[in-house]
Image (cartoon, rainbow over all chains, first blue to last red; front, side):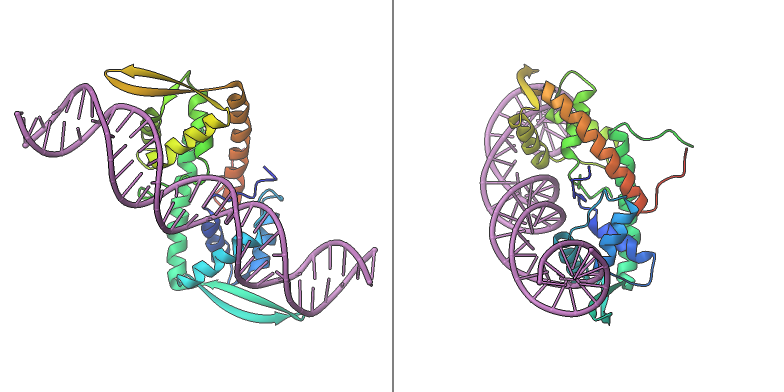
Length: 112
Length: 112
DNA sequence: TAAATATACCTAATTTTCTTATATATACAA
DNA sequence: TTGTATATATAAGAAAATTAGGTATATTTA
């Protein structure tokens, strides 16, 4: 991979999941977090991230709060109640997706 | 899931993988195979499948042969040499994708 | 026998999502 | 002072999927 920035429709789920583990997070922080977690395999580009954040906010899943830190403006995002519900739902879908994909690709590890 | 027909960019990989396990396969057969393998969770729609097959053929990854069976025309697809190489490559990407996605979603089972 | 379902292919319009490129701006290090 | 890191944003285009249609034959069911 490395080159592929393809997040394949899982971007919303990733954003919601990241936010479910903390009080709030800002965009740039998400890009760094994803890079760190995946050893640089997933690159969350701004062109994909910011529109996705704006969409989730418009849908009422995210709240925002702008703060200036070290002279730079940050836009913090946090889950709304609706967002928390959506997170649970999307995680279920993602789990099913991964599981079934592994079945098709015949890569599901045989574990108890 | 159930409702989501979202295959999220993995459709090409799925097609190549299905074909790697057999000599040849036709489109409708792929839809049934995917439905069977996933317990109905993944629905491979024709609107997604056929354009994908045509694209892979145009790229030289698939060969075709039309045969009439029981009065109905079937278009059999098989992997070319180039297609076999692409299959191996795409499978590697898919494995990395799933692995890293599981890390981000914190759902990676702790196994040896 | 007529209607519905299953088999089997296809495309076109639209929408969604992502890539690529660009823009702005501040802080810090070389 | 030039580049890198931090931080957000949008716009044009491409890619991929959804939705919705179309054609046709075979089989099953009412």
